[in-house]
Image (cartoon, rainbow, N blue to C red):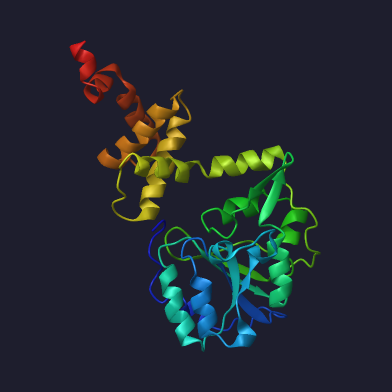
Length: 283
């Protein structure tokens, strides 16, 4: 699991009709299939043939069954599909569910989003991880107004499951727009997204080093985020930064940024360094 378990009765938000959004004809779930490979097959088996899922990777060159099983996909959502709701319970704890309310048809929305599955940066192509709801807010924030319009089109609402397992909203404005002809980011946008993913990268590296997540993932993420913010004000190398973040998770870190900075200064002091590396005192 990478985020908190979804809030109890999280699907209730989708089961309540929203009459305040004129022109909205359908609600689609955007699901990142990489976290529960093959989920689209189970959902298709539970849906009428007229309401099948739409795989965003389907148009990629050399798309295989293995690729399909990890593809993001669109699912037409109906509150009456109780079997579908049961299967969606498998998503809890994974950053993989958005709900899009739009007047576009499923094929139209699939075409719009598929255009953003791969982006170009300096003539290099990258898998654009917008279906991952940990990445989505930073991605939306980094796009220009025109790119946002091409990305979300006439959608009147785009909700996503955040790190704490509850719904959050993107600030979409329902702007009619064509589908992106060439999804491309400039260097500044790319750098912004790399910076936004640093906390998750550090958490991943700590887990590789054997650190186990205890407590809620959202709290884990918040602690590492604060640790990195105060570390950015001093010149820590990569290994020291990792060790500092791990220390914060083990020993605890004040939620006040000034006090957290004082903890870092204490941790960096010569006496503290000797305690962390006692073999230095023997040399």
